[in-house]
Image (cartoon, rainbow, N blue to C red; front, side):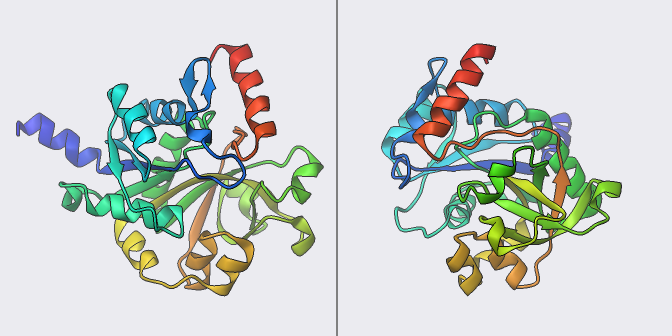
Length: 258
């Protein structure tokens, strides 16, 4: 390897993994639904690739998704159908990457957020490095009160210093605001950046009662005293969980010709 290539690889020691499967309970087959003639999973892949942070892979159990990514020149890794969470799928993919000894950070990017901002992914990586975070994620303002009671949208609570610093350790994550206080609560955006040693530690913990009760795997980290740093963004990407979500985001993105 030439010296310049080696230096570039050392700098780009982050990889982006996008877990995706066809059998989502609320909207089966959603990764291949198309917006502007491009599948949802391909939109996400393109935005991840545009960051130039490092290699990008889709981790999937479905041949249809692998075919979709690879026919467009992308990278994919086939994983087991038996994973309980997206992070479990991510870790299997990590273990299958040949040059993993050179990787320091793994970004877990949700495959159902085709509006995710490339700039936000880059800023997350920058802040995780700056803060030496074990795990980092993003949040944004809740602009519609209906979001508090929408169980499809995950919320995160942070401490009161958040406004001053634009980052804070997460206090907790939840789906329904009836269960928690709305104060210092934000709309969580489905992206995580793990220090790879922390990812290995996380995977070895059993699912906690909170994780199973609220169906939020990030609670496994908090329950085991692994801090999650939350960074703020003004962007509010829509996750595609239902057909209504898909129709809304399709209308927005096709209007913008994105």
